Image (cartoon, rainbow over all chains, first blue to last red; front, side):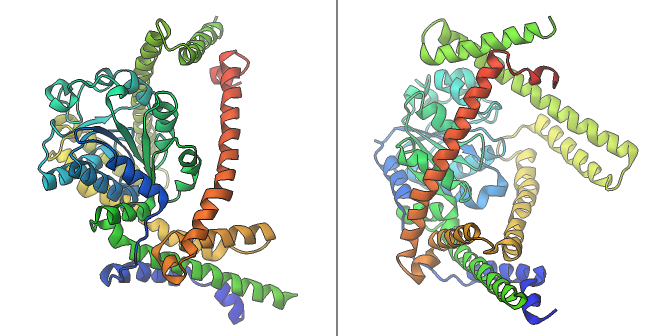
Length: 274
Length: 206
């Protein structure tokens, strides 16, 4: 095996080590790349900005700890933005593991802005059933979610007063890492009930939501950690997404370099064999 | 009768759901709410069945002891602990269930997903080759989108993010739309076949 073949079949442990260094070094020694805000994120931000104080935003968390580095910073930034604007948040989720993550985001922001559970925000918890839960809640929210995530009746909470269905919700945000998620909210809440829907999704699934954005069915879209970092930039707050962008930049650069490097040796090997 | 009754139920349920979409008034709107409630109840029972099946499969593995049977102990122990703790204290913040979620489930689940970065890097090095013109086109678009979507791209050349956005907004969107329309047409035709009783494999698997 000559050097070209050897480099083409580089030991994967070397690649693992390079990826580790590409992630760890920028986290320890931040570079501070400038984060430019893209149009879908700007639109998302403006959709929240356009709401008058006291408006009710429904945040549905359809993600889990595996996709937390991408979606959790969105959840945190969004909760901060809502409370900063004196909006009220109704949390819920179509994925069970998203509930404590949404709750933690809301609690963190509530502490910062002096908001109270039950008055300024509530977490209705998880309900199995995916798209049918959206349809049922659109018609009758108290029937679909009679209790909050901790098992307390929702009538106890001031924020739920007067909420019958989606007519009483001003904006719906789905933070999702798969199905059920943004797609289903668009299908039911936007398509059928004409509600304003915005979405936050993982970077890998973001391309699938551009048609909804282009058609005006999504008010805005945050895609991956970059989307969350852009939102943090708009909020002028440094969160985990902004801090992670240097590492992600270098890791992307490394993967591109590896692909080009491997293709170079592949083409050299092909020419030599001819 | 064994097949006719389920076929009639499917037809009625399907037709009611179609009609309530076009006629969102009584009695169809009431029926929609009723069917939604039934669906939510059935989903919960389906989850219980799934959990029961998981428990049964792994209990059998413990009895037969095939290779790697000890992983079933970990699964059953995790299942039992989370179930008992959740049933006793509930899922609210500050409970033992919440503690286990944040300190056991969350780091383990995140760790599993984080490993993907290493495998993606290794796999792209090994498999992402410009073997054909189509593969080369894919490779070039992937590189432009990847670099254009991170601040490093803007740092290298300020037009790179614009190129990445163009790929996402035009070629990507056209492809996505085609896929979505294809899927939607497939769903409509399959649903109609099921409602009208033409497609019956869900009844007996034949």
